[in-house]
Amino acid sequence: MSAVPEVYDDEDLMAALRQALAGRQAVPPEFVEAAKNAFAWHNIDAELAELTYDSNRDAEAEPSTRAETASIRALTFTSAHLTLELEVTHDSLLGQIVPAQAGTIKVQLRDGAETTVPADRIGRFTIRPIPSGAFRLHCRTSADADALTGWITL
Amino acid sequence: MGDDSSVSALVARVCDGDQEAWSELIERYIPLVWSICQRYQLSRQDADDVSQSVWLLLVEHIASLREAAALPGWLSTTTRHEVFRVLRVARRHEHDDLPPDGQISGDADEATIENELIVAERNAALRAAFAELQPNCHDLLSLLMNDPPLAYSDVSAMLDIPVGSIGPKRARCLERLRQSPHLAGIISQPAEDAGIKETRR
Image (cartoon, rainbow over all chains, first blue to last red; front, side, top):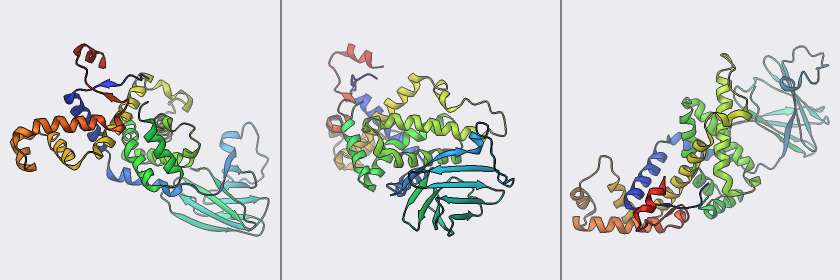
């Protein structure tokens, strides 16, 4: 990229300024507003859990041995201290916290909406219905470990 | 790319949790994201989807951006990736004939993408500089950029200044704009030698 500054006389500068302002005015206000709202997600103090298995992606490399025929898709998210296993069924998401322990799961949608479901004593939880758009899961266990998955779209 | 310091300062403030800095950053770069969505003729809904993903990714990764000055390039690349993701989902029921993510660079040539970035940077700097002009300059230049153009006599009446002072005031205001730190390294003074101007494009 050229580091040489461009040369502008007054007419050039007026034209460039007009273009710059027009470029900003062309953006719909709600588009800007939504972008500003994304800041609500900043600095969430949780360990990120990465997608380490997705049956859609990895099934051929690693044939599923699950007997669970109702499962359409299986996903695994792994952080340093927790693993979240998810199975997608026709109308719900069945989850398992590993190692097994009680906790709460927050289902976060991109518009900032959030619902909470409990995980039972052995770490099982159910999310029903399946979120229609992108979502992510924030898991906090009774032992105070927490993990945040990446965005998931099913 | 010029204006590094003010981008870096914004990014640093965002990392400190400054919502206002985030808003400023959006003001600066959202026209870039919008114009890329327009270039690929995305529906409004798809553009919203792309934009949401881009800004969420930025919120998550801003602290790990090694060089704040690389932000516009990161935004451009990420936006195009998201555009292709959305287009692939939209066409899943048709032909799956879009290239995988890794091949996106083939769709618009690099010169186009680079030029888009340069223009986006310059426009952001111009808007930032314009926003900080003294109110009298801001008002005058705004009126002079009116479309359709206003007669000087109208401008004179609206601002209650003599017609004869408009030209000189305009020149002074543009000079102030040019001196803005936002524009350092992005635009330069007109050269007396008209020959230099020919190299502009």
